[in-house]
Length: 248
Image 1 (cartoon, rainbow, N blue to C red):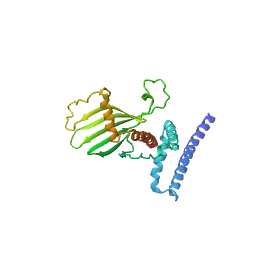
Image 2 (image 1 turned 90 degrees about the vertical axis):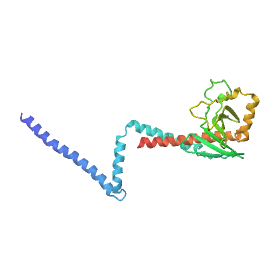
Image 3 (image 1 turned 180 degrees about the horizontal axis):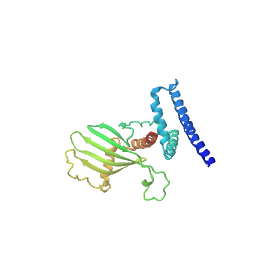
Image 4 (image 1 turned 30 degrees about the vertical axis):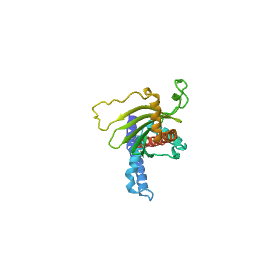
């Protein structure tokens, strides 16, 4: 009994000392932080941001840290590539004004030609890596391409809208429609037949019609290279936005 009583008294004496020791450790850690704030390298105004940073990093799950490391690694690999930094040289006689807005997956081209306004919307390329050998339907299916929408309009009147696919050194017209600005949106306009169903001579005439207005292989080959580089730039920007979100 006496021995048990001594153990209880020892335990009761030890607990306050342990608590005091823990409290003193917290005090020294707090004092160290305050000392850093009072030093010449850290201002008092930055103390709340230090606390927020400490809180954010301490609360971030391990899975987020792993994700962040992978994102940083991918950013480094992308930045080591020169593709996103390439400056494309316009081909001789390039007739369009190019408008590229970062963050968008399209660019636009505009020009005036004999009272007409030509607008071109260029989309991201459909890339073919050559790894899939199962698709042997056509030669074009194994070529990279860029989709284009070409609008030729005259002041106050209807416009022609061409849906095109630009392959290396070749442009295919997929669709052709007449757009009337006075046509009600509630009505369904007749879009015309499939372009490939038109008379062959009429198809050739429309290809020449677009070529005269600047839609020719020298233009589309440049656009193909431009859009590949834009895709790399947009991917790098997207990765950096992901990094900012995960770090926040």
